[in-house]
Each structure stands twice: as C-alpha cells, then as structure tokens.
Image (cartoon, rainbow, N blue to C red; front, side, top):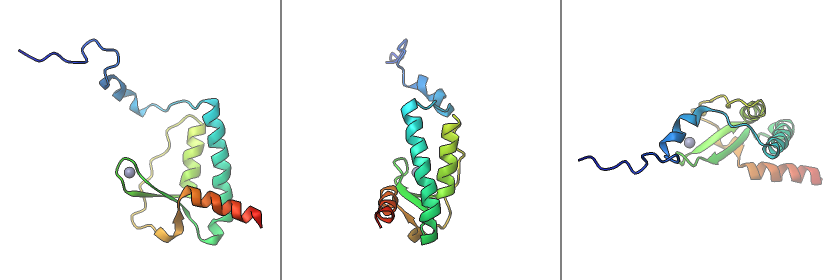
Length: 118
Ligand SMILES: [Zn+2]
C-alpha cells in the first residue's frame, strides 16, 4: 500500500509554486521607487567611484555562500530590466575578478556620502 501524499488536494502544495519560478514578478510602486533610487546610486558610483578604482560591489550569495562580484554596468542593466518588468539578464561572474576593486554596497554608499560631505 502506498503512503498517502501529504499534499494531495492541498492547494498550498509547495510543488505547485515551482513552475512559476521563471516568471518576473511585477514591481509594487514602492519597489519601483526603491529600484529607481538604487539606479541613481549606481550611476553616481559609476561617475564618482569608478575613477577612484572601485569597479563594482560584492556580496555573499545566500544560495552558494560564495562571494559574487558585480560591475556597476551589470547592476545598472539588472535594475533597468526590473523596471521594465523583465528578468535580469544572466551574467556569468568574472572568472578572475580583481577583488580589490569591489566593495560591499553599504561601503559604496558610505563612500558616496563621504564625498558629498567634503
Ligand atoms: Zn551564488
């Protein structure tokens, strides 16, 4: 005798969510405002931090627990895609990034603040 499927006839069956995975989620007005704000920051970073040798940000990925490095251009493209309601284009991480040229997002924001304070 087969064990009963614990999710039989359950509309909250976790498997029913999986096929929606590739659909872009439309931004709420608040998310749209946040992405627009971040896009401004990224363009500020391109203009003011890149000449100082900072090429982008890094963060620790929650999925693979490795550091991921993103150039400002890739951040900008991802944000523009979000605003258009598209999935961000997938970019392979650089094989051998110059890790000294990337900083955490918070650090970049603090750096911009510091430049404004002068
Ligand atoms: Zn990852």
